[in-house]
Length: 202
Image (cartoon, rainbow, N blue to C red):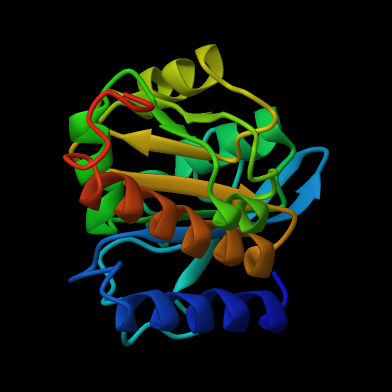
């Protein structure tokens, strides 16, 4: 696991912590190191993301288990690996931005987004109708992974987990971050204008 990768993971975590999206020790990030066999670098469990360092990462396999290390990966590591495998993602970001959780609460069958320019930053065109999938929360990563895969749309690089948070992915951590920032804006708009556009995109 290269020092550049671990340093980037730490740097991105600090950024999200400063935005209030990784409160306490919550949230986790991963980067794919190789595909065959699948290996990812993922942030470890129980570390304050505002104080995380390059040493606070561990290599995991396709089941989310640590490879040749006593470090404990994030509890969600298995879902990171599943997303990387199914979606072909190079990096996966999981945060607890409030707007993502509130949106999933209002639209548990999926959040519909359309006619918003910020969709371009999410990798879609403004006129397109995009449905961000929502799955019920579970501590079982296999169960969550099955729910993710069942509703997976290659054109929607995100998954909302009810009363938990959001997963967003991309080719690398920068693309995943840009997509996450745009999606958070889109969901905040959706939530804050819910009463104004009652019935529209409901």
